[in-house]
Image 1 (cartoon, helix red, strand yellow):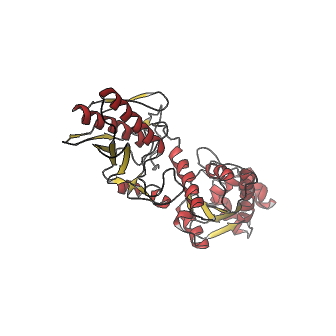
Image 2 (cartoon, rainbow, N blue to C red):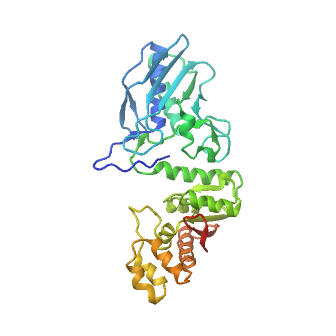
Length: 356
């Protein structure tokens, strides 16, 4: 999940996923467990063939365990896990390779996610990456590979409070994620992945009505109106397209899209990315919805909010017209998926000012 860190100027620096950091720490720990020495820095082969180097922030070797830690570097991406220490403790025991959630790593409690309820929130690709390095070292050193992998993140529970984990039924800490090992700055892939996961959990738990909202004010309004549980609320943000396109193939019976006037205007115009840097309010389009006597004034407006206030001042119901057009965009994007949709436009005071 991301925070509000502004996009830096110039070429952006890539980072590493929590899964890549956990794999590096696991490789260092198991190497130390069987050889007595920590490789530092440690080189790791990522899933797409790229190599990365990880210095160790934690090294501890005991009589029957080894523990190593890697600082999560998200590069220039505004990732809330940036700077966290991903620590892996490896001990011999059990059958094969087993995984355990240590302090700061969550446990899955709801169906619909890539790992089953009761399992540590360590996604399939990081598990495969860790298993591969254990196999590699065991073969090279002629060592046993029946080990327990415990992943912990100091402060992980506090970090998780800034993510979607609570809504997804992941309790106790963050998730260990990643499919390529690489974080691409400002790709927003983590946010869109969270939208998809939220839909998956809602479907798996039998929720038939979800709401995608552009922000906290609109989310609170839709939650209050429909008495929806937390797991039915999708923090869509600007990514209407990311949500709607996923719903084409993973439908729920009912969808509400809620947002402020400006965001819903852009959706009504056909935009699926509602970020101010990637779509703009078309004042000529808005003028076409307004009475002729105020069209010139509408075209000269500075903000969508100014137009909404102008319409309200003359007693003209602009918001319902915008909501209806936005509903058209939603239906067009869903392409006949069995999803009954509605639109809510929410004012800055949290009151619903338009519906379709």
